[in-house]
Length: 225
Image 1 (cartoon, rainbow, N blue to C red):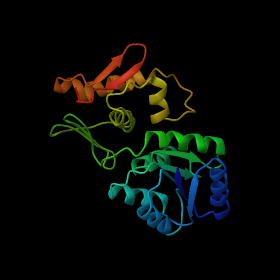
Image 2 (image 1 turned 30 degrees about the vertical axis):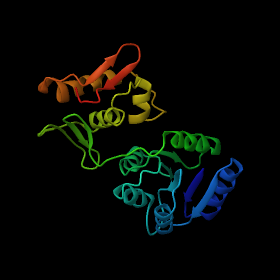
Image 3 (image 1 turned 30 degrees about the horizontal axis):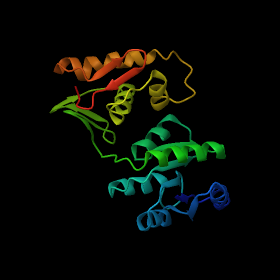
Image 4 (image 1 turned 90 degrees about the vertical axis):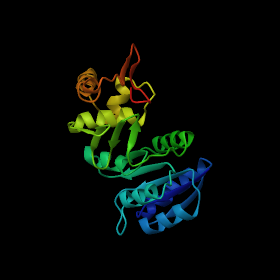
């Protein structure tokens, strides 16, 4: 398996390279976004480890360019910024996962292996489930031609459901995807947001897309209900 590491911190990039090679990966390294994008275009990789903040061309821009070219190689973003919206922006530009610096190398490897097992999953600009459409970049939602107004959190919950349409997601999985693993509130908050979404994207249109799977969690019907 071949990995591309793109990070302008040379010592960190070389350390990641040595560690991954010890784990049996083949590794190429680029120290800026421009070179990283060129390598990603010229070579087929199983995954890319991409620093978020780099001079010249950021990880955001590299990832955005790859996705615009329909290059779906899994991207694991490295960032020293752990704010909620930084994480959201990383994911919305097409990254598959992220870790914040400083990070555990064991966790980095585990997440890389998980991404490689999933493979390159196509992430179109507009996500669809039947006539339900969601545009992550513009943060807009429609049923057919009708635009639906959602709060920021409602949008994030629906986005996570539609990205995993047809799959059952537990409350904890939704919380991890929408908030983060450090969320210490009541997991039943998910029920509140699911209720809000049903009242906005389902009932006015006579649909039942957001389904409760008893004892397991929630599922968005792949056909949009």
